Image (tube, rainbow, N blue to C red; front, side):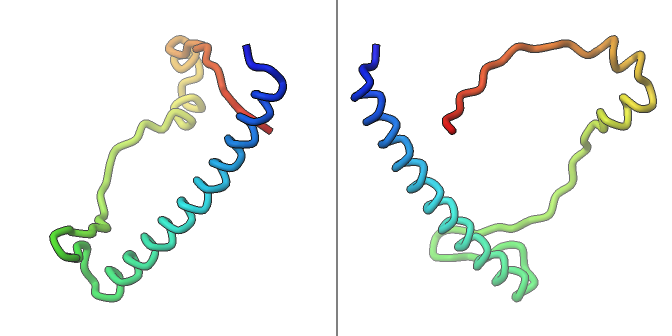
Length: 92
């Protein structure tokens, strides 16, 4: 069982790590954007950087349109839909 003091310390550390995580994500995103701009400028999908290859490639995939299916066939959608229990952790 966590004491109030330990819980407060852990929460403070969690918030500190979350802030660092956001900073890192923003910096990574900015670097990715720089590479994307360079790839676009050169009109290529692959850029060789040392022994690595930076790629920004297009691809297509098929996705099931559940919203459209639900509108078109509500009875069939309802027959194949099931409720699933899950848990969400949050701090706010």
